[in-house]
Length: 400
Image (cartoon, rainbow, N blue to C red):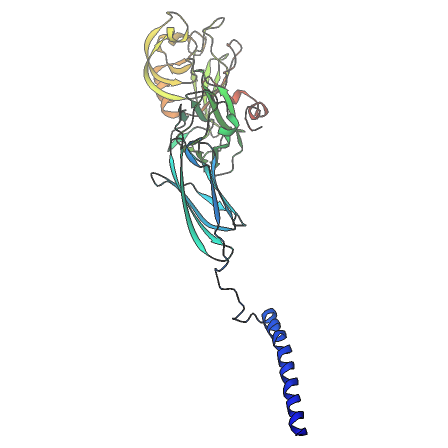
């Protein structure tokens, strides 16, 4: 009997020890090994990602980027397209919490937004939304020079003339990108065009280098011009190449025109400029050949000179909007090389005009000097920006 009691007491002690050690073993397993019987199953407590899109709703104001944010997870991709399938490109932020479009939402457009997300627990999901922008109450358009795929002279500016006023000049200028093949330094400058409209030109610090390739990308679609100007609803682009370095030097005192190409004199031509002492005087300074217009009708009444002339004129090369040309003027033959007796233009013989017309191209500078002139060509009267110093021109930028 005594032996039986000893064994029973031993069994009881063993059972008590096992009972005390069991919870300790379970705690140890949960903390250190993550045993399957205590691990949370994937997605069991996974909360959905909240996606917010701005703007939202119908007929919302245009002109701002689209913003997408994620709360409780991260964005893996965002796609924003309009009804025609055009995309607003953007980039997800490094932390995955936000996405912003590179371009602005444009007026009168329906956008579809698809945001792919991943929750903190790893669940992937796609969220779709849509919004529309209010249509433009007024549209602003642009007339630009030079045209695409052209070869121009070394003084040719890039010029944009607007249909309506531009009050948000800084915002507009930010959307204008100039790319050159050789890193040419230049600046935009806001001026008043001869027509009275707002205009912005880009000119290099000095004349272009021959062979330079130039591209303008004006990403204006979705930009507000400001009060009375309306919205831009399209982008504009042009690309051109700079040709040979040609400079036309016109000395109204000696009545000579000289074509200089790559630093060498090609030919001197006797000319007659504007009559001294009144409104028929020529302009001085740098005028840029705007266009070769061939044979045109010139009527003095269109430039405020009453009935001084009304005739067909050959080999007409426009230098200003106010009506100064270089052209053939056989009726003035006796004055070529010895007197200024025109109505403001630079006249020469038929033969010289025909030759000269074939040599020059739009963008070539005419550097005009003379004592008795009616002043320097204004920046907006043709392409007169070269008559301002580089510092003066830079100050006309809205981003200075």
